[in-house]
Length: 327
Image (cartoon, rainbow, N blue to C red; front, side):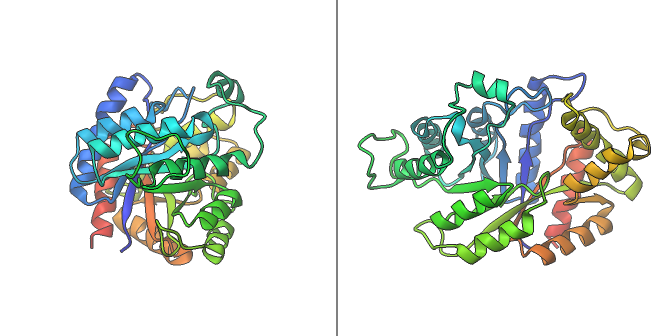
């Protein structure tokens, strides 16, 4: 089967704090390494009460320092929030500390609301071409023969693998034009997934980093020893999503029995749409869902995310998934 990887938002649980989230993140990464996952990515978000991975590069260093073989990276760094030079220096430092193990995925969303974005000192009136220019500038900082007279130290010559992240056609076009691997956020924004994949593959231009298209797709997995237990554990993320979309973001709540029967039809329809790229169930149920998804999309790699409240149950979900892809 294709490679499987882990996307972790380092969720902050109700009744807990970020310190515990970081301990759980490292524990999950160490297990993921043992279970054969390809890479472990952390995502930049700001001002979100349930997400602890705001200082993404710092947390990547924590995870890379506590593991030994698994690739660790950003899925992603929201480049409009940062100077390309600063990102190059940060990831040049990580790549120097952990050679051959660091990935850099780039997104163009702020990873926050507009008020928080302003607090990050972003230029909210920037033009649509700024993100592509910043990506090209960042690639140059890592090259062995940069055009820019400013050098990233560390960074220059390290050729840190760069990915483009997206949930629309914009990222697909940019990744194809630059010859970069493409990661699509189908785990929460699947609406344009098939169109974006086709556009990326049809217009891909080979580059020094990549000879042919490479697509990684986000996918939610809630695996347990029974369909009923998996459905119960999935309600934590379902609640968090409803809270986010109704303007009341929260820490990850504990699961609730029969949650889908308690919400309104519009809320159920929203969940069915945004979380359509999900597998919820026992080993055989999840295996069938994963096979169908891979067959339908032709994904080169899956980035699995399991937003489960109970850490032991979360580990079990990833363990079951690893048993599926290793067979």
